[in-house]
Amino acid sequence: MPMALIFEPVKLAYYKSKLHIVAPVELSTIRAPVYDLKIDILFGICDSILGFTDAALGLNKQPVYPIVSLPFYYIDFFVADILSAYWLSGRGASKKNISEHANTVDEIALYKLYPDIAERCNVDTASIPPSYFHHYFFDCAAFYVFSNLYFRICSRTGCPYSHDAVERIRIGVQASGFTCNFLSLSTKEAIYAVCTTSSTNKLFPQSYLEEHPEYFLEISRSELPFFTRPTLRWFWSKL
Amino acid sequence: MKVLAYPRQIFISSKVYLQYRDVYLRYTHVRELIEHDRAEYCSALVQQMIFLMIPYENLVDKFYIFILPDGTKSCGIPLHATLPSKVHTKGTAEIHYDGAVSMWVNKIVAYPSDEYINARSLSGDRVPRRVFTVTPIQHFPRCDFFWGKDLNHAVFVVVKNIRNNARAAPDYQNPKNYLSLLEFLHLSDRDELSTAVAELKCRWR
Image 1: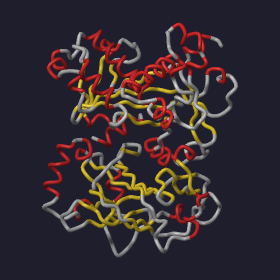
Image 2: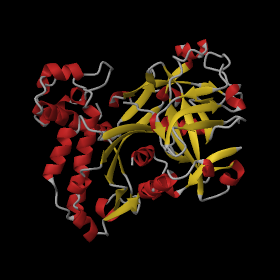
Image 3: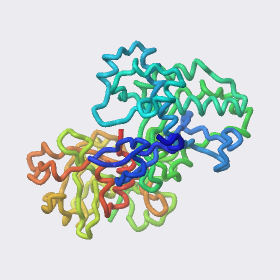
Image 4: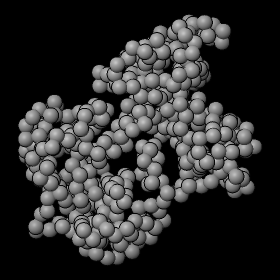
């Protein structure tokens, strides 16, 4: 299987009245409407949201980001798939109860498609149940992107990394209103959104935000209605 | 036609909303009723709109689809909010407050516009209802998102089952007339406002 495909954004295709993950090998043959998987990350604070300057993110796309929208690549999928197995097993999930959570839809598990990578990463694929793709996969995948983004922001801005806050989010990821999902027809994106509210100030201490306006800015609720992205509309209506 | 319109600020700042509510509760609602044409061109005002969606039985992921006379498909009925009146205006939803100075609404009576009265269902039948009565327990004003050229409509989505209503016609009992929002988003010729609502409410996971 061509390695280059794993650096493509994950695609979801609409057929049989549902969105299905397209395996990299099917990318060239799929005829159904296709959407890129994006992970939107939004940090809420009270009546506003925390925006970032490009100096904080280094993405070179826009001067200010009220929301961070990142493509989710097949390689991310691969890593998140494996990590989520460890995260769930760390929570005492046995093979049996993971199987109970497994979806019946024909989702893919990338470690099966790329056994050589799994081998090089010392992943014990035999320990992962055959239909491992579980309800929490997208939550775990979103958390994986979120934790990497948070680490990146802390590295670039010097903000102290709060391991406790991240760990608390990871533990609560399956139960909280931490995530939501949307379809954006205009941008052809299937969005999985991650939103922090009460934990934002634990991740980014208020005093640090105030001391570094070159990296952070608060975007008030009154400005959000001008954005049409479903994630921002959803967050705005929740405020 | 007179519609309910509110100062824009109350929708975009919860602090202002609370201040407004404190003042509001001392007075009646009459002062929010304003001529539609006037509200339409007043930048300080936002009109309250209700987007009424009809789910199939208790399945809140399947909604009745209207095919309008021009072929456009809609997943709900857009209505301007107004107050109860002896003369009912098409295209409006009369909001019945719990009391003269309450912000809680216990009944909404919807009078769809002609294009919705003349709409057809997915199975091709005429939509058999001219009036819908739903009983949400909600406080108003409310907004899920702003809509319109000047973002001068505050759209609030009301999802209410009419299937168990004794007056509901067989057309509403036919599951073929209902689609999930994901299915709706893949239809052609969708109504623009319906598409915005579906994008906000559709969950693909």
